[in-house]
Amino acid sequence: MMEKYFIGIDVGGTKLAYGLFDRACNLIDRFKAKTNPELEPDEMLDEMCTHIDTLLKNNSLKRSDLMGVGAAFPSHIDYDNGFIITTSSLPKWDNVPVKKLFSEKLGVTVEIDNDANVAAIAEHLFGAGKGKKDMLYITISTGIGGGIIINNSIYRGSYGAAGEFGHMIISDDGYLCGCGNKGCIMSLASGPKIIRYTREKLEEGCHSILSAMVENLDDLTCKHIQDAANIGDQLAIDVINRTGDLLGIMFANLYQIFNINHFVVGGGVSKFGKPLFDRFNEKFRKLSKISYAYPVNIVPAVLGDDVGIIGAAALMLQ
Ligand SMILES: [Zn+2]
Image 1 (tube, rainbow, N blue to C red):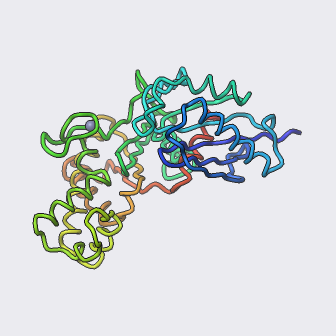
Image 2: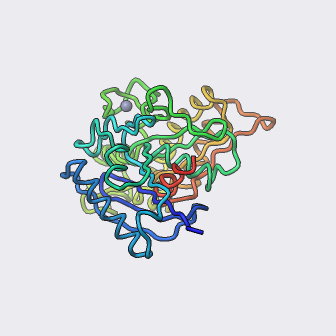
Image 3: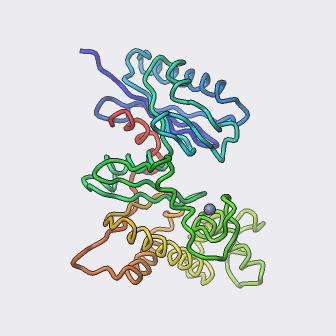
């Protein structure tokens, strides 16, 4: 019997990650490369074909051993037509019929989806949402995004942009968001905006150990804030509490809309860990009037950096 394999690709603004999986979705091998944002989509897809051949060759396999290739892009995607509408981190990747181009080059079936949807699928099948009929996935990192699982399948919306929780407006104040609005949760509680807020507090003269932790305030990271909070720095603690309160408002809004009782939270900012989870849980419970009779769980994602390649490969299982 011929064994069949899948490849899952996580296309990011800075790196490309490939995973080779068997039919039970066990990760067999991986390959990594840098993204070259200067390349035209056609050239980059050629490069991706070469990467795939290398990964296959390293495992004594050929393209004919593949049942399919799934790819996650940081893009707004028309899933049914396998078409990328826009990609903010890769400006050349607008209006690209990726599924058609890539499958013609490879000679293998290709499926593409948005990276947050793919992560939601992975956590639902193999991670912190396993066994849940309905689930919301929320990722908080450079931006804020998410995926909606209803009745065990991803809900993409009429135009493929369902789950873009980051542009939920929760205030009429705050920094300008990439979308042109103010007060999007993403413009308040994403990693870069948390850092910007902290830096501004320091520049205003707020006393904190953070000033001594970095030579230049431009080097400030969420890890510094976490370390400072761990040793009791008040500004760092306040920043995490503020982030938790803002996210608690978003979760309360999501619960009002979906009435889904299982939230999985991933992304770099979630690494603030228990202090952040405790804070947004408290805010969420207060706003949503959650009772013990109808529990709602907000749990950390478990698949880590592999979530993209696992979810991309899992597109082929659908
Ligand atoms: Zn926005």
